[in-house]
Image (cartoon, rainbow, N blue to C red; front, side, top):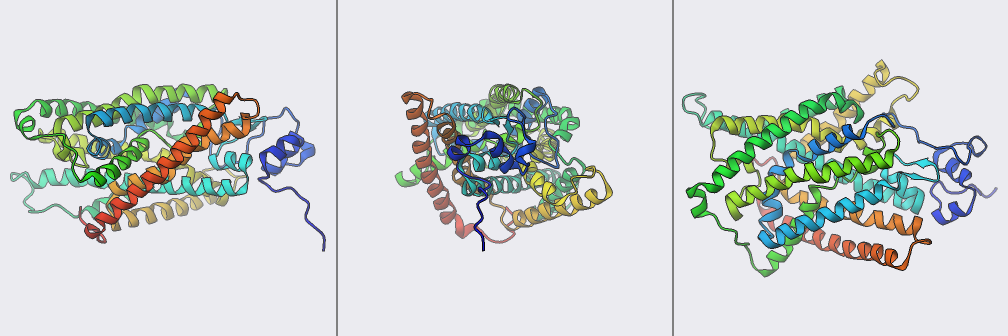
Length: 472
C-alpha cells in the first residue's frame, strides 16, 4: 500500500510560493503542470459569465443594489441605539474602513497570474483547505440570510400597499389586510421567476436602467416626505432622540447597531462581483467601489439620517409605516421598493446560484440548453422555496440582520483582507504596515465577538414574541 505524495489542493501559501508557481497554479485549478506557462493567466471554470462587464455597469449595479429595501430599516437599526453623536461617528468610521478593506481586497484578485473569481478560492489558496470551507460557510450564511431579508421586505411592501387600500373606506370593504405570509409567498415566487429568467450577474445589465429609475424615484419621493414630516409641528413636538434601556442594554444595542452599519455597505461577495469585470479588473473594481462609496452611500446614509431626524427614537423598523402621506406617495414608494428589490436581491444571492450552477449544470452546453434550463429551474426553485418558507415562518429579520452582520461580515469584510495582506505581502512590508494590519485583525475580531454576543442577547430577549408564522 503506497503513500499518497500528491500535494494538497490548498497547501500552505508559503510552501506554494517557495515551489514553482506554475505547479501551484496547476494544483489549485486541476490543470496539468506541463500545460501551464509561468506567465499564463489562469481563470477557473464557472457556469457564469467572467471577464465581460464594464466598471460603469458594475458601479451602477452596486449603487442600485445597496439602495434597496434594506435602507428603509436602517434609521431604526443603526441610529436609534446610538443617537446622533455616536451614530454619525460610527457611520463615517465604518464606511471608511469598509471602503479601505474592499479596496485592499480588490487588489488580490490576481496572484501570480491566477484569477480568483470566488472569495473562498482566494482564502483557500492562501491559507489552506480549512479557510476555504470557513469562508464559504460565512459567505453562504450571509447571502442566504440576506436573501430572506429581501423576501421579508418585499412582503412588507406588498402588505403596506394592501393596507392602504383596505383603510380607504371608499374602496375595498374588507376590514383587515391579508396576512404577511401571503405576500412573502408572492415575493418569493416573483424572485424565483426573475432568478430563473436572469441567471447571472452579467445578465442583469438589461435591467439596471429600470432599477436606476425605480431606485431614485422612490428615494426621491421618500426624502421629500421625510423633510416635510420632520418640519411638521405634530412630529416635532412629539419626537425625541433619547436612547432607551438600562446601561447594559444600551451598550449591547450599540454594538448591534455597529453590525447593522456594516451590513449597509459590505457585500461579502466582492471577488464574485469583480469576476464579471473585464480587464484591468483591479482598476475597474476600484472605480466601481468609488462610485458605490460616494453616490451610493450618500443616498442610503441620507435616507437613514433623515428618517431618524424626522421621527426620532420611535422610528419604525420599516420606514414607510411612519410617513404622513399622501396615500399615493406611500403606495408608490412601497410598489417601487418591491419592484426594485426584485432586481437588487439578485446580486446578493448570485454566488450561491453560481456555485450550484457550476456543480450541477453541463458546462459543455449553453446556459439556455434544454438540459441546463431544466437544471436551473430545479436549483432556483429549491433555493427560493426554502428561503421563502423560512422567512414566512420567522418574519423577524431585524434581529437577524444584526446577527449575520456581526458573525459573518466583520471577518469577511474587515479581518480577512488584512490577513491576506500579511500573508502575501508581509515579508516585504514595513513595520508600520504590519502593525496596522495586525491592529485591524485584532480589533475587528474582538468587535465581531462583542457584536455577535449583542445580537444573540437581543434574540434571546425577544424570543418570547417570536412564534411561527407571525403576522408582524
